[in-house]
Length: 325
Image (spheres, rainbow, N blue to C red):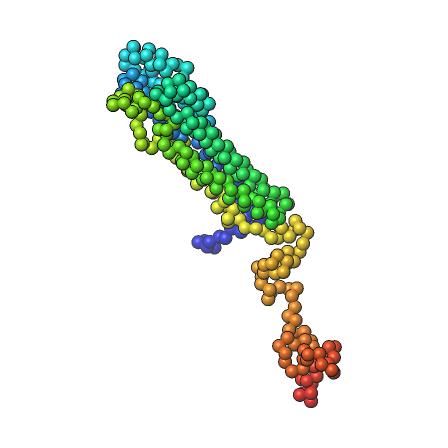
């Protein structure tokens, strides 16, 4: 009929496919989102100015696996300052480096100058291992999401539907964003003050020392990768949300266990009442209506087992027959 709404009927198998495809799609989207923060070196951006920036303006970008240094020597207006920048910074210091390079360089400078030029050797070591630890934890969380997706396919498609597989699938999808959130919190606690990792030491404490070598202090240096990582954490909760609307299928579980559905899902088999309720179960008989058995303790039923009581005799029927007679 024109104008009549058509109802789209989806079978249970079709609903399972849609649910699993949604979980797989959101897992792949989440893993793709995490590639940027894991590989980019913009978790923090720190700038140092030498001679108020007239001699050199050094920009250091920090990632989880290393840092990128840019001395900006080619941006100077005078040729002598460019040459001085290249001699002080050196073209070899530009580009990507591991935290081990930064650790060795700063620790050597601190020890050679007895803390006058630089300080923070122990702190930069904690930055090194803390950043790599954060990356490892985030990598483990992505592996958990892959395992959750694999369990989802085993449960709905591979004929291995069981309560244990479903619980493992749910645990994997819960643990992944929980680990990510924990890693981000620990990273914030470790790196909220980047000044202690690159401390020019005694120079900054001299009157006008910041004019020689200075960096803004007390500023928030968290940058694009960290903001993106927090957004990726929110995206990683999507598979768990999809799983929330994909409940256990007890018929599949009963088929996997080789049991009848009523026996598997009924009251007494799992400790839970079946979805139809005990009063509608076809295999349960109302024992209170059986012949010769009276649970209410009415006249004609002797629970005390006194002499003359015969369990094979229907006393209620005899009593009713006598009254009719």
